[in-house]
Image 1 (cartoon, one colour):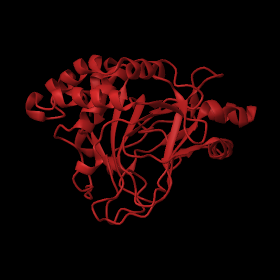
Image 2 (image 1 turned 120 degrees about the vertical axis):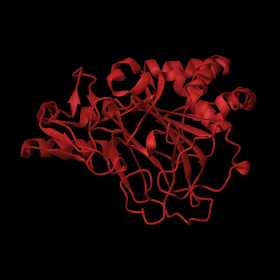
Image 3 (image 1 turned 60 degrees about the vertical axis):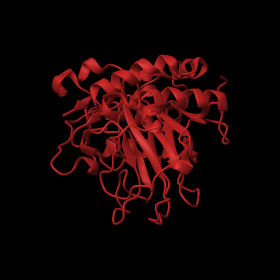
Length: 327
């Protein structure tokens, strides 16, 4: 299985040929009845973990390569996965929509999550479901979150949380009507050279606080002062949400503005089609979305999202009964 590039020439693409897609669908269908088809049941997740080994070897090899080294873009597209768009039900349009019942797309997400690490969710967000619908909701158009349809600003997923996801997965089941809703990603590995030494130093100081996103509801709290860049100076991790992170000093504010501009200059936009799975390395890459106009006719844009932790043990104190949901 060859890793190529998208139409923009920057985002690695892992193509899934028709034979591999059929094998992936067959593997997914085998685990659908397990545990009564309840996606969040530990027994069903265990079946998905076992089924990972039955996925096509080329797909597994490429995904494990991405887990080890997400590259200069910190993102990748798996293209050609089975979602069977014509057979899908209408796109959900209610707040908090999730996928609790086993489907082929949900099984694909959970098998790949098991290959990249372990699936995880956060109880205050989407009621802790492991597979979450990202769909436009009437009345939520201006919402800075998964239910909105206006421009979604760059952010690390759950930047406020000490155990934020290592990887974010977004599987496209249905594209928007006008094909204009683009997933935007920006990697610190490409933005860093555009920053001055002064900005880098300022971003490395604990002079920023980040609130919980609106999807967690009010009263979810926020962080103590933290740096935006941390880790290896030549290849740092990034922790920021441009809608929720606030600088505590003028110098920090200027540096944050410079970082946002650098992400804007190096950003890539992917127009996801049914069967495209976007992988985002949340440690080094921010993501957002361009605006689109929903019609609320049952055929609107529909993504399904899952989070991955590469070391589930680190969050053991936050998970009841050693499950997959963090409190």
